[in-house]
Image (tube, rainbow, N blue to C red; front, side, top):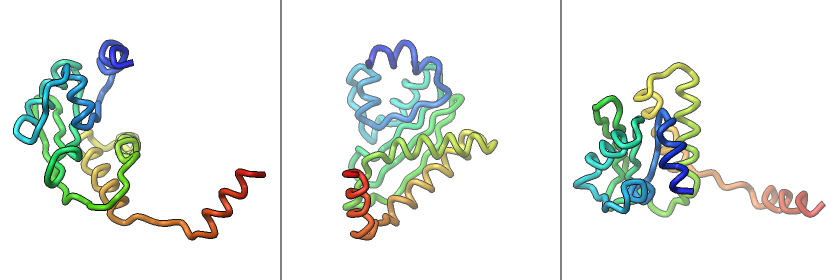
Length: 142
């Protein structure tokens, strides 16, 4: 599957949004850390000829997300959120960016708005009421 991504999907993409672990695989297991994150974003963009939002949530410290677009690098730093289930946040971010692009925003504006939206959602989690959770399980049994 990785080879299909590398040869067929990513060269057709307008934007890729890998996390650090995914970027390392796409760069043939090159180690990525805070010191070379920008260079890795540039390498990905040049290799696959698309914009790159290299997400820094897997690095130590506050996450730094880098957008490489048309030779320029833009940076967003967010306070690390502790004790938050972030599973699915990358998919949520990609969907948010797509929605903002569909509204006519530039890529940089869409990434900015998407990152803010996802950070807001993750920092304000909503827990369903226990009776709603049980009702949902009961409806699955029917």
